[in-house]
Length: 236
Length: 150
Image (cartoon, rainbow over all chains, first blue to last red; front, side, top):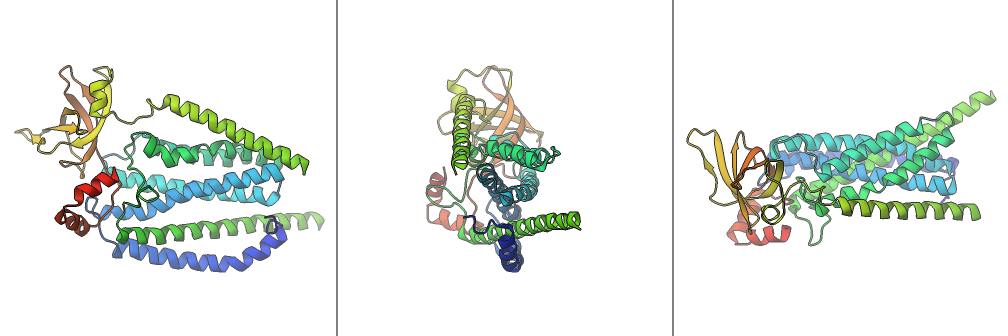
């Protein structure tokens, strides 16, 4: 597990896979956007507005996935004190906050014409807003200490506490009556999205995931390089 | 190694306690986290009149009537067991139609009618092209797919 956690090895490994990730991201997002905006059919109720889903759903999924990355990396950092885990958690958090914001804004733009409101305080929308504030709180807490290791430890604990929110987001639409529609994809009895819409959505979701991986690798590499430059300056 | 074991134990114990606490809080709060009541809740539970509340259900078939001046709309919201009458004046959302899921914000009058201040359309979790819906309806399987989605 820690074979790639050695910073020097991580630099070599990430340099090797980064171009592939970036290339695949560009291809998948380009193909996904063409499929979503031009090839996929309009919805029987929503008409063309359904196309917002192809951005909203992948962004929502990555908002949660990025938080899971922050939380797992935080646990590894707390238990095994691995410096690379701290860097992974801290560099994933702003990306997750970005995806959460995209999810909230695209959802709002869809809600106005479809539901008749930009925002309601139902369980799904509120729990995702809480996720956004958790990200912001984590980022602020990490930087609130003069000693970076103390900041990292405080942030890691907050990240683990916030993990409670992930199942709440996922199951909010089943546990409580919400205005937000229930799960369409990962549900018992199979998806309730027509195949002609599910495929473009899958391509977009994969593209978003690789986009996240690419950005995370770039951010972690720059962070490690910046630390190296600082160390060299101190020696010189 | 022993230190790491202990820290692993701390983190796991902490998460289990936290999860338990969250589960308790959520199950206690569950009645207050409901975004809307169903017409059956309204008929069977003690819900005080004169306070703003939300009702969710389907717009009953054949119940939508617009007033002569075109300003207000009356319709029934049903959950197939009970139904309540809604009076609303204002613009309706695009998805509003008979058989559609809606959430109404309003105040219940003494006679049980709801004076609505907002009507929100609720979208279900089915996403389909219009041709597929037509095909399902032609084959007589539209209701079946609606039931499967509930």
